[in-house]
Image 1 (cartoon, rainbow, N blue to C red):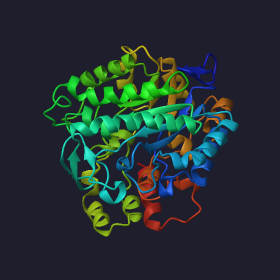
Image 2: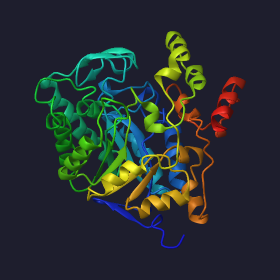
Image 3: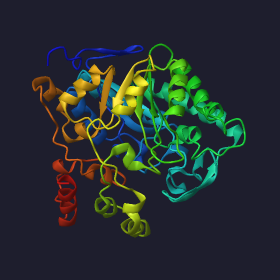
Amino acid sequence: MKNSKLFTPVTFGPLTLRNRTIRSAAFEGMCPGNRPSQMLLDYHRSVAEGGVGMTTIAYASVTRSGLSFPRQLWLRPEIIPGLREVTDAVHKEGAAASIQIGHCGNMSHKSICGVTPLSASSGFNIYSPTFVRGMRKEELPEMTKAYGRAVNLARESGFDAVEVHAGHGYLISQFLSPYTNHRKDEYGGSLQNRMRFMDEVMAEVMEAAGNDMAVIVKMNMRDGFRGGMEIDETMQVAKRLERSGVHALVLSGGFVSKAPMYVMRGAMPVKTLTHYMDCWWLKYGVKLAGRMMIPTVPFQEAYFLEDALKFRAEIKIPLIYVGGLVSRQKIDEVLDDGFEAVQMARALLNEPGFVNRMRLEEKARCNCGHSNYCIGRMYTLEMACHQHLNEVLPPCLRKEIEQLENK
């Protein structure tokens, strides 16, 4: 397409990408034993081979207490050789490699994370469901240092960038949001206080990153429900991150524990979700109340763009757009609107070579039908597109997919 920016290089701090596409940090579920697997390597290599500028490994917890899933990555010294194999494979295909670092906060169970789940404040997380414990003030410095150590481990593993997860209702987001932060000390109350934990994390991250690691932060523009953060506050968060020296922001939204489909859009395929669940009582509970607990939020292409443009008008550092990109035409439109790069997840799960096809076809569009089978499956097994499975799905799941894709 004439004058398209899509296949021009883009720079974030010390890192230059070959084009403006990034595989976003969508949870793969490909790390049994909390370590990288051949499946993880093969998937990210396929995306790199498919032409993406950078691919991002998702949800790497900075401590064991931050694990939310049994098949989630836990960033620690003993897995560096395995991660180095992944980054070497990605680099061999000409792409850069990033890793998302974070802590899930209250989105876990003791059986997974080894402790009573932590958060900004104590309470009960009905969506897990579990009791959670507010972090003591004296525990916070060690947690912030864990983020800095994670950056150093990422460097040793061959990553070019880290993406700090400060959105979606995970730990940093739990401190930021008045919905989850009810503290009475200097980490609660006013927005300035609620940003304090984020500030301290970013100080550790930026020091560890030095001048050879790109630092990207994923943040919420809105929490996606009444009582959560809105743009008046999140714009201040973005400006604080800009002042901290980060190289780019990923503009997202939603709380996975409260408004998960605000993040991903469309309907949660409840039959798929419960089909793969192991816990019998949770399976039946979700079958009975799933539609009420996980309401549908209609999908439309580039669903975060209207909000993201408000940030583009006020933030000077590079901004990365994420949310509902499935066509070359819309990606070019987003880049023309002033965003430095775009992130995609479902499009690249559906078609790992989508970026290469966009180079050849001005009207390229991926074949994702937005049934969200991949999301329903990923909470128990690895993330996978129903169009590329080896196994045959039972009729009830095939029917659910067909109904959701024909809406």
